[in-house]
Length: 137
Image (cartoon, rainbow, N blue to C red; front, side):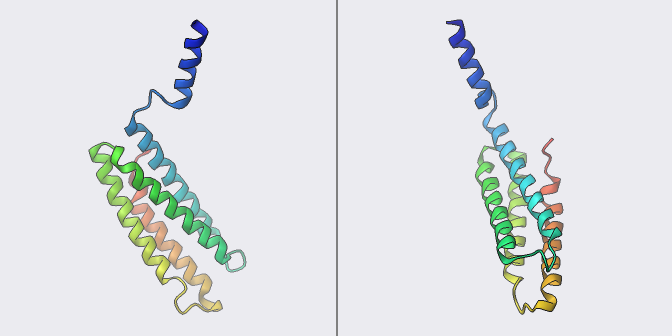
């Protein structure tokens, strides 16, 4: 009987039974936020010789997926955090859509790297003004 209780308690700890829905949502937001940061750093490091359309598309897809995870977590957040995360998610999503639609317009080999760097710079600045301000500590 004691060993069964120990197994149940261990499973509960591993599964995060003591974690509230708000804590789980916060962790989901923070994990997605960290991945967005990682993707932006990756994109910043690309050059004309290292960038491929597939690599850029994969990073943008990953960022979009992270934004979806953040949106999915919002209902479980406390009111103040929910409002902050929602505003950040909307602002960054709008910037991502704007940048994604402008990249590739009138693209030539000579200006491709400059255009990519400008687009990534815009995204990084948007990230810094939106998600970087959200505490994950």
